[in-house]
Image (cartoon, rainbow, N blue to C red; front, side, top):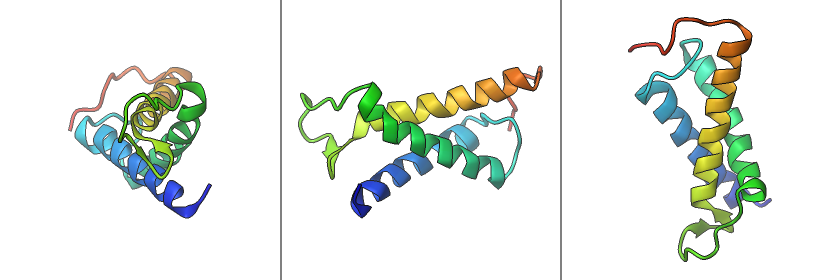
Amino acid sequence: MVFPQFLVLLVISFAVSAILHYGFSYYVVEGTKSFYGKVVIAYLGAYFAGYFIGHWEFIPGLTMYNVPIIPAILGSMGMTVFAVDMTKTLYGYKGGYHAA
């Protein structure tokens, strides 16, 4: 992986994490530590999405530095939602979603 690919995946993971954490208030614990944890999880989801979802090369123009944008966004969202739901399930959080 070269540096531009790293930056594209990092920007996608920051955007998805910000939308889920601050836009939808989708978190277990409030604060920036929780947000940065989501960024790491979202980055892993975006990185591995090309392997699991595919590269979707049939849509021209939706790759940047050989990173498939839509699968990266979907993988990032999927991994983040999975991590938050598993944390809520394992620790017995019964409060539903936090309201802002």
